[in-house]
Image 1 (cartoon, rainbow, N blue to C red):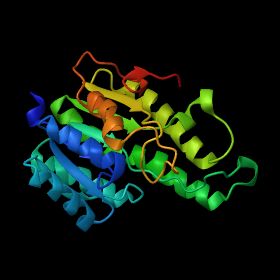
Image 2 (spheres, rainbow, N blue to C red):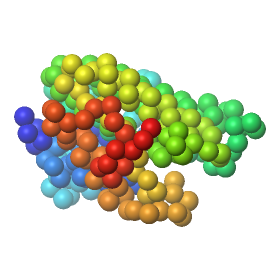
Image 3 (cartoon, rainbow, N blue to C red):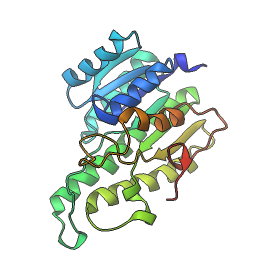
Length: 235
């Protein structure tokens, strides 16, 4: 099957990096399911791709809501008969500068529930659909801030959540190695989005390249890796 027949779900794809990834995948010929927390926002972003004669549709998806996740993945599988690609882009960063020793535990809870548990929910809902066709590509958006080499102070819950995403990536890759499903993570670096706090080094379109590459890997491509600008990055 070529990329023109693939069906991709990109979480949080109505703006920023997710929107750029969705467009990049649509340009490979895949049908992209654009998601957002509201149906209106998802459909509006999908309409932009449709206006450029790309294949897309909108789907409401709140990764912090288990029912929303289950419904969205099941709807995609039912409507298109397959779910080939999942890019876990949706996430939050709400504790900039916060230290672990004096953390706002409610912010920690919200961050972990969205960034790690939300990503995990999407994976467990999408994997059964991928297994039906013996093919899958899961790409998790992580961060340099979640790597042990750059683990430091500030944004503690964000760092811990992304370290969790990294661990989940490795575990799923090992579990799914015989199922035709490749699982990788990538850091976009400092991208010009609302999370960059004015310190961007690349545009969303530039950063999206690595995610589109990982989402369209051949069967002998890497799995269980962490990448930045298509190059391996130390955990």
